[in-house]
Length: 584
Image (cartoon, rainbow, N blue to C red; front, side):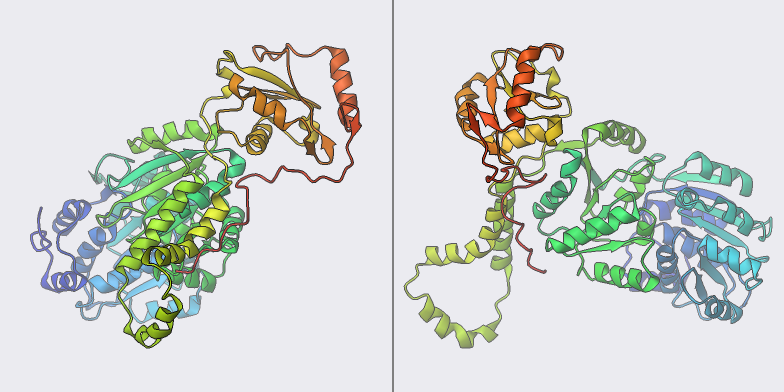
């Protein structure tokens, strides 16, 4: 691999590179910088987010502009305010030894008057969002008629956000003989159309293959019922105690709701979406960069400006509407040579989308299981043990050791360790000890062979608020069965059917001997319907009798007293409320 000096950069830039701690150019930098330095051409560069694209176009632009001139010579368009500011800061760092350099950011949510004053002082390079840039051009507050270099950064995302008209309008005010450099993670038709309309015979470079996902990121998906999505998110967070993640939702409303629920449950979380004020967004991003927020819940648009190298996980709480957007999401992790994990929480109806994403990113997803409650308890316990083991001793505690030793003088080492770790372990154990298995099978259990299983009739159905999935979960919970022990569940209006293996027959019938739901007796009997056909069921007379008995609360001549409470809880985990996580 070449060094930055081998690429042809001047001493001012090389000195800044040394200060920044860069040692070797990334692949996109190694390919793009020599081309842009040595020729006046248009360029299309396809590379994943986090591969160093800003430096790939930033260094050549800084070396080629005339810093002694106050004329605007370079224009960089980016999709969001956050990314605009990020590029501006990086360009200033790259050009810190270029005396006289002025890089100005233009974006919405800030004073347009102040931005106009900055440009009037002389800005060789303008970094702008399309909307604000178009507004300033229309007000004649900026002149880009003499620019020599234009950059469309994250071009695919700008077009996804509906900026095509703005980009077209902005570029119409620039000279025809300028050089245009287009950088994008993916190459959809709209980006190809922009290249065709505004670029002349562009040279193309590609890092990896078109639209391919980063090799630094592994991809996993977890299959759960849609109603268990939030519970699955919490378990994934609990199973990764050192998580530093971005959680993606499709809408601003869902983003805010999920973040609020996480905060209520004791997680260090925050929301980032377009309904926040600029000051709120700045505060959230500052907290995230300082790792005061471990789980940043964001929309796709708001997350475009996130450039943090240490993100360990991207969690797709909901899959994006556009499959190509997944590439941008997963690119938030696995940056700067580090590895990362992209997790997707999906329901049965969404599994087919995984295959579509695999075709685009040229990567395989691993199907993983949502951790069980006891697995999470073990992970949390060992995480605490490692933190205690690696903690540097604070000798200010020495003053108090006498009293502490006196308190534990009759406690053995093993007993002391057990007491100490029980403080943390008990919180998770009490919460997760009755936790259900959230994992489901991709195939409907209607295809399962009934074999020697037992088919049951139960006198609750859709009018009692059950569909086949919620009834299955209810039965698994009250009977304390595994995820595959109840199958062939068929919910009717006022009654239902389900199967278990024959060895569970005694347990099922015994449990429902005297069981009430909402103050009424629930009757379970062995059914003549074996579950081989949905059309075969009970006689009309028996159906009417069961409906009549259930509506009156009868079971074997007894009437429900209406005092017992339901043993059916809401969806998700059962047991006590989740222990509040210690703030880290």
